[in-house]
Image 1 (cartoon, rainbow, N blue to C red):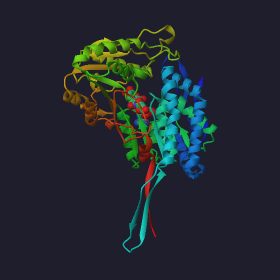
Image 2 (image 1 turned 30 degrees about the vertical axis):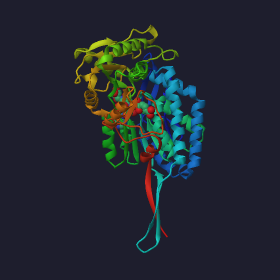
Image 3 (image 1 turned 45 degrees about the vertical axis):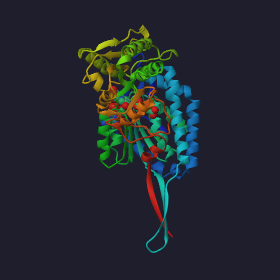
Image 4 (image 1 turned 90 degrees about the vertical axis):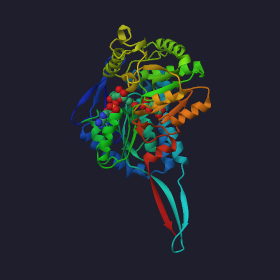
Length: 486
Ligand SMILES: NC(=O)C1=CN([C@@H]2O[C@H](COP(=O)(O)OP(=O)(O)OC[C@H]3O[C@@H](n4cnc5c(N)ncnc54)[C@H](O)[C@@H]3O)[C@@H](O)[C@H]2O)C=CC1
Ligand SMILES: O=C(O)/C=C/C=C(\O)C(=O)O
């Protein structure tokens, strides 16, 4: 049986308490291994190692030397691609094609983009006359913030963790990562990569455990943590902000969403259906950017519902190791119960269940997994739970609309503001809506098309701050001003 250990100061270590918890495979419900749960002792040791590394060899490296090490991390992730792939599939149950095309390549790319960024970024400088007639030159210099706590979720474990570790290290910080209790494997494996490339001890640390009264809380409330970056549920983000306030540490928060897609009658129909199939059902709907509300202009409403139904029914849940499988299980039995709870509520609230709505009939070997059917509803009022609350499952509600103002008001009538997708051939209308929809990310005729140089993050209760390209430097560095009089 596998054992997942903490990675502290370059070494894999057990918890002093001997406390462990079980890690289950969502594909068949079988035990993958035991995960060591960090107590205060392990979190203290990890933060101390990270703090010491700032003043050691790591802190003395030039930007070029630091980037060379991180380039070696990219090469080593690619060399061990299959190890990462297998670990990620076992932990999450995501299909092979998705993990191999999205998650693992992005794990490497998330280091590469920030080595490129940090090498070419400039700061401002000003020349001025002093009151006594001399000259002064002021210039900005970016310095690392210090020890960064990275708290990451289970839906895209390697991708979302490295999206924060990449820029943190490129900027010269050190990190202590607390991966989700559901998905410890790839974060733990990255420790082997760090050692293989000769990363100085203490630069990358990992502590496993849960949130409240466990590793997550101990880490985010630790006084020697200088900044906290988080992806996950909004209520968790709020709890972490309270911990961060004690000691006045900056936070970067990427939180929940209830994303809408707006489909106009003049859209490229085939592209729209292809894209919605991905945005509603990919990764079993467990993407914070995923679409759970679809608004369709009335003339094509029935046609769109019928087309998406056909596509949803072609997403037959199956063995993620089979390269043809398009949809796997959700992350856990607990999450399955949450998603099925919404399915039940939608029916109780009077939805028309266009397709799905329950648990698929799986082959004997997979029956123990946490499966749910891709599901589409219509007919609910805007106040219904499945239209207002984040479900994080392979499902969407489709409503008709008649006017641009009407749909805009519906899209914005939600506490979240992460992402949207607008489908139309009228580029003026698309850009008009992009200015007015209250989100951090607006896709037009596409979805989850990423350029890692661009700002990524949410509005309203979906987040605080932007990460990506130079925008990540706002969080991962302190901008210091130097004034020289001569
Ligand atoms: N990317 C996103 O926006 C994600 C959203 N979710 C949403 O959140 C729901 C719950 O999923 P969870 O994994 O439980 O999300 P979560 O937000 O509770 O967990 C994310 C991370 O935060 C940690 N954590 C939890 N409470 C904490 C605390 N008080 N202090 C410090 N760390 C803490 C967890 O251990 C995990 O590493 C899902 O059903 C989904 O709706 C979940 C994962 C990702
Ligand atoms: O592309 C990214 O950087 C992030 C994608 C997805 C999420 O943030 C998420 O699902 O939480």
